Image 1: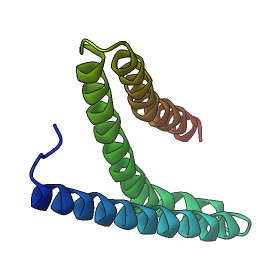
Image 2 (image 1 turned 30 degrees about the horizontal axis):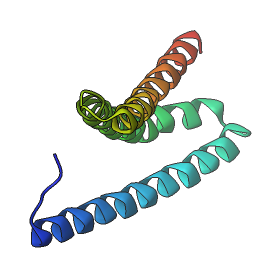
Image 3 (image 1 turned 60 degrees about the vertical axis):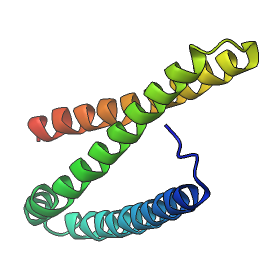
Length: 121
């Protein structure tokens, strides 16, 4: 639920902005690290794979956890809105719930494929 007090709304907005900035920095760092590992894989595939499993994979799992939690939150909020009496609110609720489901499901599918590929390597 969203806070109704103006101070609480501002604090919630600041918290969301800080979380978005921190997440963006984390994803940027992870992306640059994976690029470095890709370059290393050209010369030493085993070392790159070991570094990926020990450093990049745990970071990917944290990003996955955040995405699933955010998706679950959106799904829950969307379903709460969809249960309302207004027709426009129901439509918006279903759109938000769908976005939440996709936000949670796509990373889970991608990480499952990654584990499958790592198991074959």
